Length: 330
Image 1 (cartoon, rainbow, N blue to C red):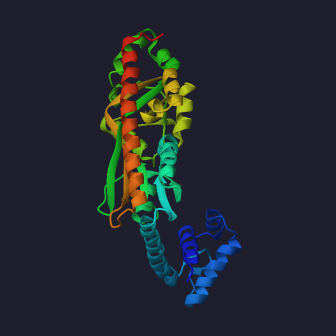
Image 2 (image 1 turned 135 degrees about the vertical axis):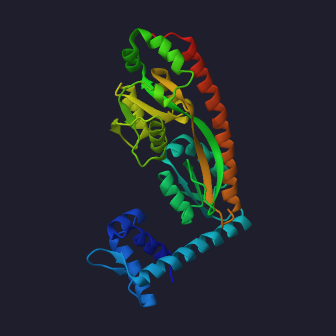
Image 3 (image 1 turned 90 degrees about the vertical axis):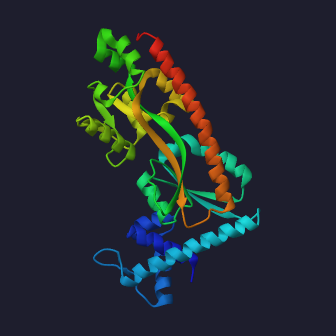
């Protein structure tokens, strides 16, 4: 039995497409097919129906159950060996949302590599729904995502709670309010409700995104229907569209006040906090597996990095909003 063959088989079973699975594994289709055929010969079974399209046979479905356990146990064994020997190599499988990766991963990576140079990090990016599935299926040791759902099968550690902002270009807001723009800015800088949102074009995340769901819930609560002029799952694109004056969008504080480019962008936009609405970044991992020492170290680094981010966000957003409340709109 080859652990590599089992791992390749699991990827093929997940994709149910040899071309896609091979591309994901960075191997040729012939190599992937050879591994699957090797398993079929070894166990005397047929794992896939090839026609009319690729699907698992009853034997293939059973193989998925056993192979998943075998691959997971091998990872656990390697983790325990790595704990016993500080020089041992290991793999930390990390799931993270694209937004959190952009703002936090480079700092986590630099600090972690200094402590554990022999531990590889395999990164999986995805939405909160994808990350939860990765953790529940034990394909990821740790997952960092936004608005993660609590589950008896998962340990959940909150890392950061941040404000949610309504963002609009300065030119568009001034054009909308005219001579009342200065007073409107000072008022909105104290916090805005969805009932108070100006009737401007909406630039929104796609409906499957959890941040978009929060926005939709708030619109529903005040009997308004969110009719987006533009939708995208790329938050950076929405901010770029917003800067160009295309409409109004909603972003978390990290997109504006954590890094230099965000601070520069905030100076070109008006950003108003949504009253009573915040988002949470959480760290989750399988509840039935004790994280190895090198994974526990990563958890501690996350706690430290996000605590520093929290302090920076609070200070910078407070200073920004104080300036808006005091200044006249030009």
